[in-house]
Length: 120
Length: 220
Image 1 (cartoon, each protein chain N blue to C red):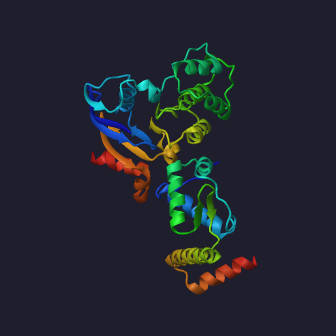
Image 2 (image 1 turned 135 degrees about the vertical axis):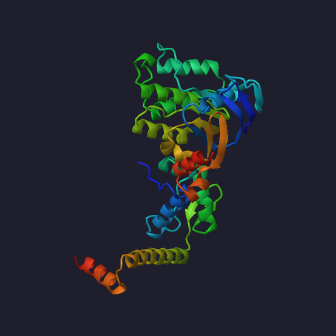
Image 3 (image 1 turned 120 degrees about the horizontal axis):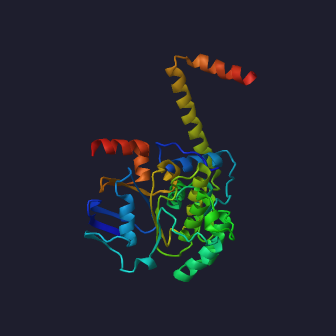
């Protein structure tokens, strides 16, 4: 089954986020070949023009590299992948803390709750 | 590029203009009776506009693979006979592609049209339409009245077999949700007018396409 997409966010951004997540979590390794535009379009049921845009944006951010006649590959720049991973972590943590604070929890309570969850 | 300029047909279409660029997938959406099918018929050359023009050479059968909503096949044709017939009529009919489509849609080549289910007839219809190597594919309501699994299969079939470096696709649909991910653009019609044309990804930056459509209907 192709992935479900959120209705109010461009599809290219959602496919990008998914690929970036797979790269930082090492499901897709540095230097690994990515599927062709057509392959990914078929796998996700997304317009090939949209997938083209995904690859163009990833390339611009140096997350991938296109080798002429060979295809698109995950960057071998491990420092860059680590940086992106850290940025994502920070972003998710900020969002989480923001949501928890909106519910009226203090930082101490949040931390305590995370530690409690880990020992369960 | 399909360039529709200011066409009018009796009371059904009034001053409709839009373009479909090469290599794009566009959908005409709008309520029942808004003129979607009439526009496709005008593009396919089945109807002539009273005024306005569609910039295409006269013999459109060479350029456009047109698939009306109602299947028009001889009921005694088997799937294979249907392929043979198409091959005899269109020089650009790609038999290899048709066979691959039959496999993809799991069509029984020996079965006659009369005995195929609605979903199977639809798949056969879409198979012969997509099997032509011509620049424009024009499909009227390819998903209408089908169950979700068949719809999904048809959407996948389109992505699988279209060659956007050589071809463009124009469809009409009510099933926006099922087909949105493969669209570049939507063209919105109401009461015989084209009221908007927009890129789907641009719409989604602000809001869901469905919501955009509702807002559009309220303001126009």
